[in-house]
Length: 303
Image (cartoon, rainbow, N blue to C red):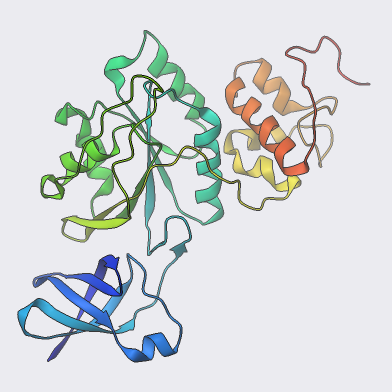
């Protein structure tokens, strides 16, 4: 047997598919010492394997992990690609904002893809781009059925391991098929009755789409639990607040009911998207357990 280094792309029932550059796929089991150490291999792990005949081998050890996500359970992620439909299913800013916080909490850069642009109304795409231009995410606009709109996205994936995520029905499988035709993934049709996507991905799996380039498809989601964030930390997950917050009257301003809040002034001036600020309010209330009703427009600030 010879030893090689590869990446786990799939794991089912204790058998792991490991992709080794220049060799291809190996069907591997984990050596007993890993089980003894209670170290569970994850999709995305770089591993040392012993290569036997017939495309089989054993995982000898797990190499150093750069990071490991809990949901989905995948290691060594360079970035996350969140796909959102402009419509059908309806776009929910709060869901995207939760995902941005979740990935920021884990130190993973985010690409946001607004898909199904052929269904957009006039000005709708521009509004979404304005809304998230200051979010810290890299933004893309695509129509998955038109390969020409995916070129910039393909370039952004090159040389990286990317987690592909998003609600069901937004076009993730179509994008995966365009990036890697051999994936041959099932493409679901949108339910006309409930306007939600049918779930087509049932487990997470890495696909080798080019040299040193992997794309991890994950089951769709319709909700996300907010990670543990302290109330005073929440504003830091909204990068577009940062500059304005430095001008607030109070250094510990929460940007809610405080007087002379520069963040609220920036929202009123259109410098910060009102949808993002509204999402911040909802998330703050969730974190603190508050039940605050914010008026749409305040004529007078507290003195």
